Amino acid sequence: MGVDDRRDLTRPTDAGADAARRSGAVFWVALVVGWAIIGYGVRGVLMDAGSVRPFQWATWIVAADVVHDLVVAPLVCGIGVVLARLVPGRGRAPLQAGFIASGVVLAFAWIPWRGYGRRPDDPSALPLDYTTATLTVLAMVWALVGLWLLIVAVSRARPSQ
Amino acid sequence: MRVPAFPFRSRLHGDERVAAILGIALGVCFAICFVTGMLSYLIQQPPSWFHWPSRPAGLYRVTQGLHVATGIACIPLLLAKLWAVYPKLFAWPPFTSVANLLERVSLLPLIGGALFLMFTGVSNIMLWYVWPFAFRPAHRWAAWITIGALVVHVGAKWSVTRAALARAGAPPDEPGDGLGRRGFLGVAFGTAGLLTLVTVGQTFRPLARLGLLAPRRPDVGPQGFPVNRSAVSAGVLDVATSPDFRLRVEGQVARPLDLTLGDLRALPQHEATLPITCVEGWSTTQRWRGVRIRDLLEMAGADGDAEARVESLQTRGANSVSTLNRDHAHDRDTLLALEVNGEALDLDHGYPCRLIGPNRPGVMQTKWVSTIVVT
Image: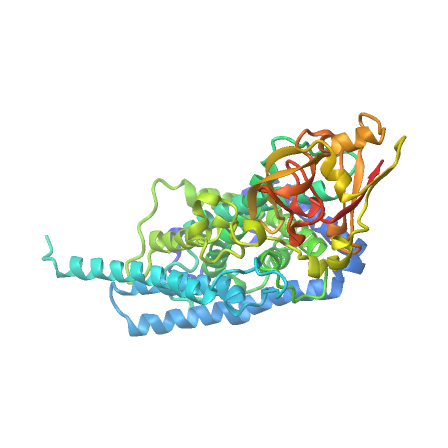
């Protein structure tokens, strides 16, 4: 699917047969080498079964996929749809940027904010006030969003050339 | 194979240029993480063919700092990439050939593995362990399957990526409100930069004050720098403070040594300014003082090319023993440190004595040393 036809998402995409044909030897060499490396990784998991616990390990990997595809991505798309309905016009882009950056910051800051890794015997682990820190970073993000909105508003107010 | 149009109205869903640029950035980042991660593993569990030098002193600090910082920067890039290609998840029919099936199946270890690596990596640097498996082998083998799946993916997307990037100049954005291609990429890379800025200070001292979300501050902890395992956690409080403490040097030596703390203090002392670099990504440089390991080996009559195993009073865990190859054992700055910054070591930093040497992971800078076994 090229850029020029991206509005028509129902057109055939770069299906495997196409990818194989277009990439030629690169496709097949990468396919063989890549699956050999995956096989090496799986062998390693089985060899280290005592510490890796293959079933739980695989469950976590599949769960990561499922949680992203069925929870996180739909949620993000849903927020995007709501935002599109509530905020028409050029002010939408700064808000989208703000929500994206805030979501990533919150996802990263969640563990220290909640203090999950803190240890009473080791005050140097997660030593900061992560509530204040997270709010500070979010404030930085939204200050930039505010600046962007201001620029959008000013440029809109100017008479067109 | 068709991708349903109806739920995906964003002009960026399916934009191959966005996917290609993010894909290349992720490919570079994953390669950096993979190489630096495997290097760290090889240093800690060296096979016979691998030799890790003791110089330059700060090399491991750079490679491991890069590993963690790059992994963190990947988070927004990966999420942006997954969002851009999300409609393809629902392509129908699900595969069109055996080759296509193998390529699409490899997306499971690619995406699941990448998300797994990021979650376990971030949780690990924050010392939060919520999984039933050992972190290091689980993270390591997930890296192998992810990088293998990435190789498959690169091969499958080789031509389409080149085509998307080869067009003269960027094609114009579709008209519409909201983020365009440039804006979306700017947000993805900008957020990666922001996360880096507020965390990298845990290893890059000039940015320490900006490390708002860093799990460690290089200047916070006993004697002004962090610890990764406390004396309480290691269960060494009593033995480390016992007046009966002895350091033994044994193994392949002509004269086994049995030294009190007073004996160690009476030996020639040397100073070295060295970084201590935790595998979790933080690092800090301190001024250490103590007895050279090579002097102890010489006193014990060990061979000039002897290697050694350093054992801790801590009896369990990865931190309880480390090895010194020939380079490290005989480096002028590899010390059995008794002091840091002019003070006796804090218990949490390894009192009464700890190993400190150039270009080593923190997990191999054994604390509460009790025995040096010459091999």
